[in-house]
Image 1: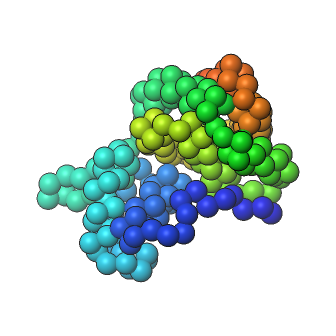
Image 2: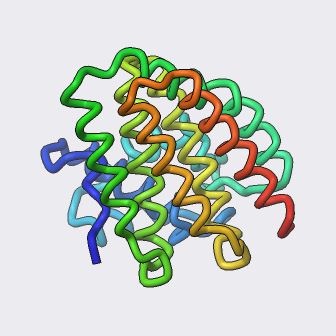
Length: 220
């Protein structure tokens, strides 16, 4: 089975590594919504000191993945249906913009990488891929598109909201009958961007976000 590409890269500070590791545990629901976070246990499991973990948790609070209460501690944020509506309201505006800009601006070598990524996705046997790995593919595709749009501010916002959307996706993943279709939609979107088809890329991205919200609401 082909593993999803490394989204973050290998070289990072201890605080950055802690941030990525804890963020992934939160997104993949290895740390469940509303669950208390033990920074000492996290530090031991990650093989880092408490300071990098605390720095990571401060960043994750800005990302709305954790919340701290005086004298109570830090907890994974909860989730409810209003979160889906609020997140989708933002993503349905910005995901199409990112796809359009990627189709318009991405240089030849980036287009080639997006086309290659589409090819790898086409060969993916969705039924044989576990939940976490499937979500890593989803994250990889979206981040590749955000980078290709060549707007770091847009990229930062979209990464934050895609993390929150993926967390919701993971919560309902076992009940969703159309996960393979969701993954398949990425192929057409990547190929449209690689071909410089801005109008089509924009529309496919919009349909993708709308379809995601509809799929979740159908199983709630």
